Length: 194
Image: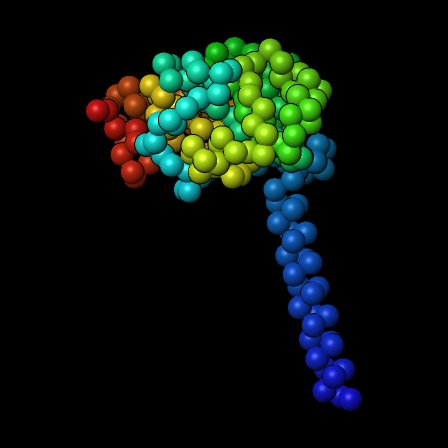
């Protein structure tokens, strides 16, 4: 009997540890307005296929194959993504960022369109990726919020971020490094002149 009780206590302790770990991860990723400061860290998304050019582009994003573009990958079910959307359109916002587009990964088209409309993203080039199938199959991206930087249709950098101003500063620095022929912080040569 004592062994069974000890085993039950052990399982309960493991369950509590896992529960607290999950809550810690959620609180680190999902900053709610007014409760937690938004992280300004911009870090590389290592699993994205940097250097790859998508074989096909969704119609609203076809311009990406001909010009520099930062594609923000958001999810309709992500609190951090809703915060990013708010940052894009709130005053002063980032309306002057001509090289930005939004991809909303969502379970169904209607939910994605509702996200675009309710967050005021209709004025930006956007694409609702039902099931995240295009972004996953073409660029191996399954995380949000994510920023994908394209030059001449090729993915040159991929970042995980929560603060749009910090992301813009990083993208601008990468562009300056690229223009000066420097690699930037990427070690895969994606930002090298070519």
